[in-house]
Each structure stands twice: as C-alpha cells, then as structure tokens.
Length: 279
Image (cartoon, rainbow, N blue to C red):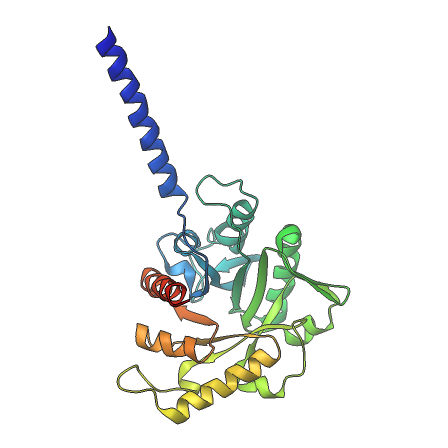
C-alpha cells in the first residue's frame, strides 16, 4: 500500500514537471530583440508566432486589397483569401497583448507591424484605416495633433498614401520614409517612424574583407540624419551574414532586416551577452 502511494506521488510529480516543460515550450522566455526585423514574415511556417517565439519586435506583412479584404501576400493573391491581415496578424497580436491567447506569451515590449501596401495606396489605406479602428486600444496613434504610444505601432511602406495620411489629425498608422530623402525631411514622428532603403543604394559590400571606409562613412551619415528626426533606420536586401550585421549595428542601423529568424536571434543574443559582460 505504501509502495503504491509512493509511486502515485512520484507519478504526480512527473506529470507536474511535464506540464511545466510543456508550458515553457509554449511560452518561450526570449529576450526582446529591439534590432530584429522579420522581413516578409508571412513566408514562415507559423506567421507571426515564429517571429514572436524568437524575440522579434518588428514584423513585416505585405497586403493587397481584394474584394474589400486585406489579403497578406507578396504577389497578386489568387487563392489566399483566408490569409487576411486581420486573421494572420491583428487578431493574434491583440490576443497576445491582452494575454488571452494560450499559444503565445503576453507581449511586454512595444512592437512594430510594418505593412507593405502592394495595391492602390489610397484605396488600400482607406480599408486599412477602417480595420485598425477595431484595435484602437492597442495601437499607437496620432490623436488631435499628439503622438500617443501604445503596445503596437503600424508603419506603412510600399505604396504609401502620404498626402492622405499627412492631412489626418487622427489616425492609427505612420509611414516608412525613403532613407535616401531623409536629408530633406523636417517632419516629426507625427508622419514618419522609420527610414528605409535598399542596402545596395548605399553599400555594395558583401562582408568579405574590410568594410570600405567611404561606404561606411556614407552609411553613418544617412543614419545620423535619420536619427536627428527620430527615425529608426532599416536597410532591406542586405547580405544575410553576421559580419555585415555587426557593421550595420556599429554604424547605428536600428533594424536588421532578415528572413533567417533563428540565425539573427542567435547573433543578437550573443552580442547582447558580450556587451553585458564587457560592462
């Protein structure tokens, strides 16, 4: 009888430990990676969740307006009507932020969702603006001339409805500026949150050999100008290797654009740990 009680006790302990391990698997304790940008996130096996599980705080989704729906796709969507922006991103993000989704951890750090508009800028933005109103309680906004920071900030790139957005005194989205035009900018975070351009427009270094001095100086100049106006800098289509990533960060680039979520996570966490040890 005592032996049976002893076995039952240990079985309960084993099951409790198993539940804890399962919970840890479902709720990864990742360090929020403020420099990590999940490019075309919807290509991954688990859109949004793969990025969140790896600690990413900046996530990109491309959208088309089709039959009144905002469809997430890189090319013209034909058979992907169920892959809506609401279903893949906005609903899950709201659930995570409000801690009502058992598949993902509560989000503590501010997030950015960059939305790349592939269809008509103004028509798509009109539909997007109406949709975002449903999530107003978690979205950063421009409210009666004042920027209000919340858990999730939406930034528009691709086909940008600049003139429409600029005239609005109340909205829930901002714009990704062209980094090559940043020296002409005099506007604040009321319109722009980030400044981006293709890597090859400023740098053609692949990571082999030393970073050419003039190219590095040019990049640092653009980064400095963007930072002067409070914008985060991102270079897309940059080489996917740690040597380039390190130099981009050394030059002050804020967001490292990647399709390789685990690889960039590993690089950034090691960099964070090294910096902490040096201090």
